[in-house]
Image (cartoon, rainbow, N blue to C red; front, side, top):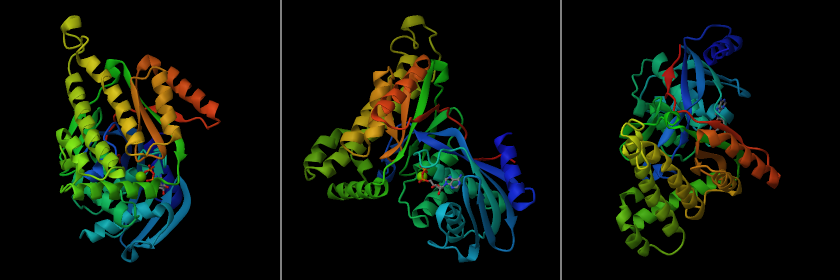
Length: 403
Ligand code: ADP
Ligand code: MG
């Protein structure tokens, strides 16, 4: 059964009627640009084929009813009574979106929603943003709101910040709402200007593996807030609006002005990470051409398009070292995936998402992917850890209506 059919069928079984429509928003994986989005910096995520679908009917009695195929909890709440703390569990995310719409001045009422998703939950692949964006898009159509895509993303982010109480940046929601098939989204999180950067790995014989460690360490939430506060303090001490405003060329001099220790490390990560995003984008731009029209010395030759794409690998590994050593958000499991993948011949790898578990992205030759996945599984077995799940990330479409 297709994803659309199962969403419709699930809606019927819960509510005994057909939905008015079905809307979908994807999970995402960030290629590079980690912990830069709350520093007004650059990110480069792509949408995953895995997505969250919301089948919905508008209700004119002000009642919001919530069912999910992934959760036993059923919630019924009056939209007029929504506010932070009014609902719990997974219902926080969809309720937050409806509340944020009302707070933004949109006249919205109730709905029957049925959620179904194949985005791994809690894996750093943004099932929360997928859920928010799918609900936001459904409401946009059900209530004729006329939201644009960045508007949808900002609304979903505010919902997660102010209602769900998660102080996330805007990357996840922008990726879920604005990505397009076959491309990564080069996003400037300061002004939300964005460009689709073509990413056709298969045409170059490459694959981007996502390895989900299936661990999430307890520190994650507190550590995120602490890193974020540290970045903001460093920017203030340097007289900058955000660390994004510190040019790479001035990094060393600026570090001297900060107290030795954590603030220096955080600053070094953010500034070098922004530079890494720009380097990767330049390589992807250069790779978006013919494979080898000029023979070995042409653009497809040793210094050409395909080689350019392969050169992304070491930048990923460099980014991981920065997240591990300077930003201190990796963990034994993600470090081991990166080390094992690289030892097994990957072009490069890095943890992706907030850290303290979650997933790793691995850039590899297509023919090496299975061997790398096996090597990672063996390394986990040797530690007595549960085997991670891996799959290939194909850049997919952002949020859209299915029915
Ligand atoms: P991530 O966004 O990395 O997957 P989060 O902790 O931010 O992890 O979000 C996961 C939470 O989002 C889940 O615990 C659940 O509350 C909610 N969620 C996501 N997808 C669904 C779904 N399909 N059904 C119900 N709740 C969901
Ligand atoms: Mg999330």
